Image 1 (cartoon, rainbow, N blue to C red):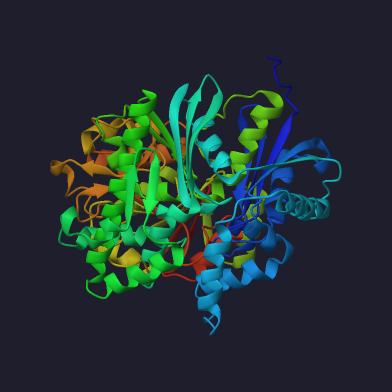
Image 2: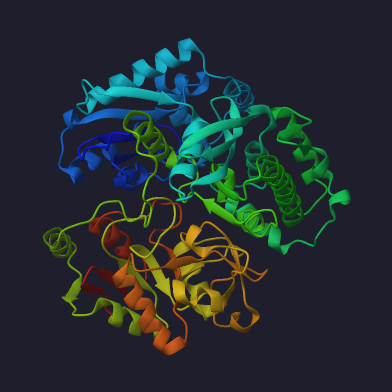
Length: 573
């Protein structure tokens, strides 16, 4: 196979829910970002012109240097929103509770579910191709080769080619995309072979989306809250769970008794009889039972014990933990940008292999977003007028402040790709104080009381703090899976665990030296390198991207300390 040259750039673009762009060259992610970080609208749905330009700016290249552009999803529903962007904007405002539903919205929703079940066709493909070409020309792409790829194929490519595994079963599950809700593949010797497509009609993602909506939460955004609420219910045995009768898995197929709209009505009738936490528990159990059955059957059929997954359903960390604990699996890799926001990278990885023969993508870390110069940071500091000073050792000073019981805003280096803060755009606090956790929640994050915060842990301390016997932490270092905390460390981690004694950890290795230094300083006092880490944002807003974003948020809160690289910004007591 011809070795790829060093200037074969591939740009991946996603223009739907959580739009974004990713730029690859050889097996490296040069840059990746989601549009929300630049538009400042959470889970942005517009065409990602800003993200594309940010990719070009970082690489210091013009559009003419990029000959391959990859985009996913050409079904009629997605094509319609490309032709008429106001449709997805209206749904975005409704879903995010920025607009009250109208009298016709119930019928529109029913139509949406039926329409999204349609598979792509020649007309939808050509119309999507034309719309995307037009948008790309606005950013300067005139003669690029545009590849349009299947939605679940892109999820699967991301899961397989970023896993580092040579051979594995690949599974994708989400709400719906290109008329499917999932797919199962075999990845062997760099080749992908499709085993099964799961139709949109039998969607576990839509099932959980309905549950989220019925619990008065935002679909496509608050499913994690449903999972967290489930921990507070009294267990119900499967034979007594009425939701179990609605969905069944046999072999590699999922069978649903109702279409999407009918399923919503049935779920609504069942919810009337149960408290919210009980309903959440029953839904979580249905999801777990069906996906675990699907994984077992796929592993048994293929004889492959390594599993890679992507798609929004696998943002459910409790489900992922149980897959990782299965006797039938040796390794589970969860693609860390598992939702639709990761489709840009998935599309780029696929075309990188198809066109240039690059078999995989190196994902040793996720710090592939923007970084800012000292000059830019100083300019922002002067503009905002806060008191600040340059410090010799930010990590050591931040650790001292944290150990005094203060909350610290921590802004360093390149921004993380994906939905999780991984120590470069983070809010930090001690892990062992519930009162600090509660203060953080009240003063800043405004999360529901039952949704826990997460820890960052030094890799070398993971085995001591957590039960990791059946799970390989190196495959899931970026908050993609729940782990059970060892009983002797429940007090140390009381601010970062759920009521069931689990947590969603970020394991910190050598890829982030400044953050490791901070954790090492904390370890001197607490005995282990562990800290509370949550995303640097106010509830309902995207994670901060620039120094200006960080200072704007700092100005709106009661938090006293902000570290911008090696500058400490302080408010008067």
